[in-house]
Length: 290
Image (tube, rainbow, N blue to C red):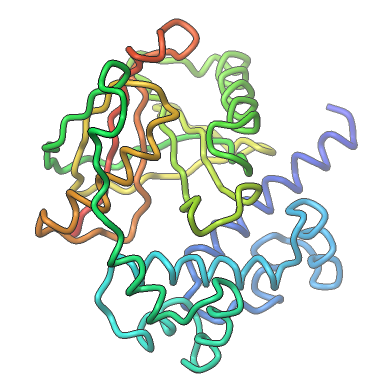
């Protein structure tokens, strides 16, 4: 591998570690020195490297991550605003209120009221000839899954996601990692109604049995096991946003369940290049508190 390519891969791997650390520790003070140590970059250069690769300054990224996490918590938890502020790293509620209003144009309380007043999503609005959704999910306890993944940043369903999947499967082929029972799994970390399209994070993942070391864009992680509601959906991937709207606006409030603090994910059961859109099968996994 040429020197420049090796350096870029090394930087990508180290920044992946930083991003995971940030999102796992939003309730804590994220000091520059700590993040530089996680990445093994010097504190002097860390800011510049982070911005060069993420197209966003470190402080702006952390603030955005905290506020977008708080928006989810306001919608789906009943905790007081001051408690949610603490959960995303704001010690002073007034500072949180000010930052939230600047980001979303409304106060946390008004944001919560607006979200709670959204009408249930009418799944029948969609063309039933091109989609089918099992409205009653299976509730199962799932074992943890080890995956390799590539993260894309950009529009869900956009070119960035396609490139991530191509690179991931090429890596699997080149390194002879294919094994029976592998699952293709997608994780969309952000809500398009909250996060700008060009900043939406998506992980293209494949489950693995062999030990794989992170390498450049190729990262590894374990997806938490536990209790999940599993929805079976058949139809175009472009309708998955509507499926999630139905789950969170219709099913969840009436189910009596509470969300666990883990991301939802999709398991794709057939190949989009070999299957017509209306026959694509996806299982949507929604994490629940035990």
